[in-house]
Image (cartoon, rainbow, N blue to C red):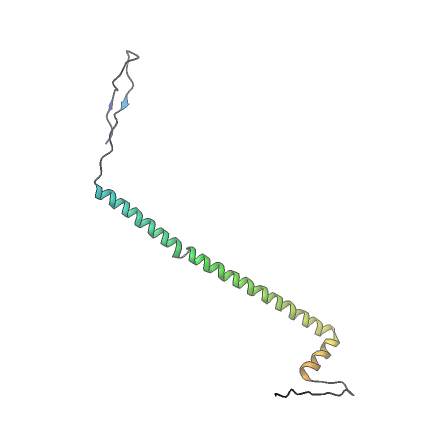
Length: 126
């Protein structure tokens, strides 16, 4: 509904045409149950949005879980990179250094040079 435009009462400055002014319309009074229903609806919507922000598919809890998983995977990746570098170094030494091959043969296969004497010591439990 459009407001009715009426001239405002008061002193005239000009004897000519007065400017049109809008008549002030008081806001319609809503029943209390309607206002309360609107407040409850807004509160319910806000509650649903907060719960979705916390536990939804892309919510806070899921983000924290994904961040923790990322940190674990990054740590695991760093460990694997260090292990890979160590193995690469060991392969390089075994390909280039005859002393490394001899040392590995002595440790793992129990080989000895001609003329060497091997002593085997056993620990006895007391």
